[in-house]
Amino acid sequence: MMLGEVDRSRLNGHFLVRVLQAEERQAAHYQARRYATMAEIAHCPPGSETSLPDRVGWDEFDDEFAPAEIATALRLTRRGGDIELGVAIDLWERLPRVGEALNSGLIDVRRAKKMINATCHLTEDDARHVVDKVVDGAGELTTGQLQTRLRNVVLTDHADTEKEHYQYGLEQRSVEAYQNPDGTANLVASSLPGDRVAAMMRRLTELAKTAQTPDDGRGIDQRRADVLTDLLLGDGNLPSTNNRGVVDLRVDLETLAGLNEAPGEIPGWGAVLSDIARQIALDNHDGEWRYTVTHPDSGAVLADGTTRRRPTARQERWVQARRPRCAFPGCRMPARDSDLDHTRSRTDGGHTVVENLEPLCRHHHRLKHETPWQLRRVDDTYVWTSPLGHTYTTNGQSP
Image (tube, rainbow, N blue to C red; front, side, top):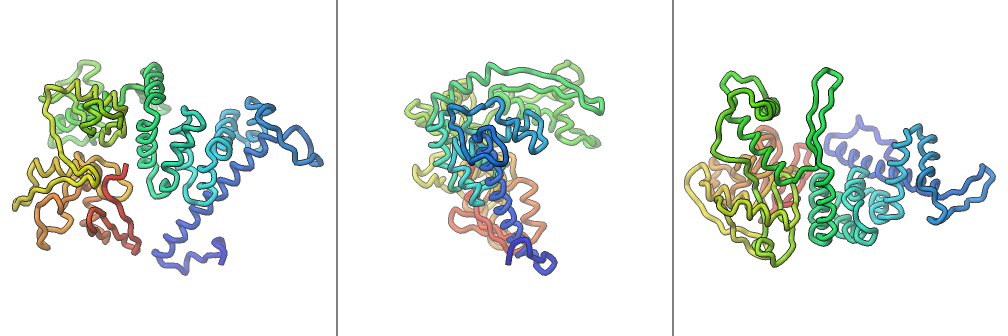
């Protein structure tokens, strides 16, 4: 039976999910063919419907005006035509493995564009090297996870190029203000150092939480916006906190010692250059440090247990070090901002030991306990079963 002939009304929820996945693969295939056609059109010399199927090489390729044919045929703006043809050339000429993966339905166009954008500043050979390392498993990752994995590969294998790219980005830093149609306005700071933005965001969040009163009807985003306004204008009575903006940093000891150039990571934000990781550590040399000794191959953390229901601060740090993100597939909420849940509940005999604790963001914590979703642990793998009978696995460490 052809996919287009499927009668959805005769299928249960389990098989409708299968249909959805098949339709996604088919849509990816058609998108790939669409971009392949664009790339072919761009290499066609002027002619008419009676012309031979000739093509021109790159030496005759008109990159300024070639998009016009695409834009007019699809009723796109000039900018839209430029973007679409650029994607087509990237997929089928610069990064053909990405085009092939899209054509096979292994990835969708969103993931394809993530790979294009993450490598656009690299040479063609370097870009293909990065793609070769991530494309096979890209379809199993969310776009956020894929972006993090791409960033890790770029930072690890092409650190010198990335340092230059980072410095160029810093030179473009700016602050802009513009109005919205409803009369409100936006204040946007762009191209700032990532570690400083992470620290500023955590500082805003801490102040916003402290500023909440029992009858406060504002959400956390609204309170953060109000705190930022008060900070810049010097208005209001902001609560005092003992901490300046804090940044969580995960980094190898070898990187801190300058023995390798492996990137560090700011949970919730992504990978950072080794130079930046070392600078963050240097800036906080007199602060409190928490360290975890892990197995060099498996990354396993030594366990500690307690009979208390609530984990100790030490256990929390160990779980956060071993499982830096929410344990639900695809969720990237940092463990520090998540709840610690017992994999096997205490009512079923579960103990408060690091092996029986996993970080779950508040949404997925509630999903586990308030819906038919089921979670079980197999060694270091979390196995989730959906209400419609599908299973999904994660190790809680994927980017």
